[in-house]
Amino acid sequence: MAKGDPLPDVSVLPKTRRYLLSPIFDGMNVIQENVDYCVELIKQNPHWGLSLQVHKLIGIR
Image 1 (spheres, rainbow, N blue to C red):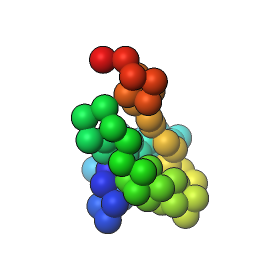
Image 2: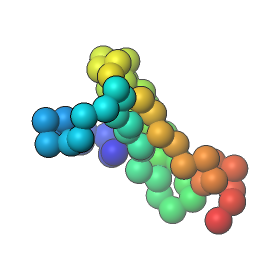
Image 3: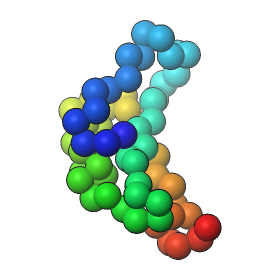
Image 4: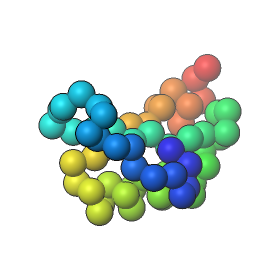
C-alpha cells in the first residue's frame, strides 16, 4: 500500500481472521511514509496486520 490508498474491500476477499497490508517499497528501499501509513491503518483497524518484505529490509535480492 502507498500512503493515501484506501483499505481493500474485505467483502470481496475470502473470509479470514486477519487481512494483511504490505507497504510499497521503491525497489529495495523502504518508503517510510508507506510503512507509517500502514501501521496507522492497522492501529485503526485491528483486523488488519502488517506484512513486510523482510528480504528487502535486510538487503537480500
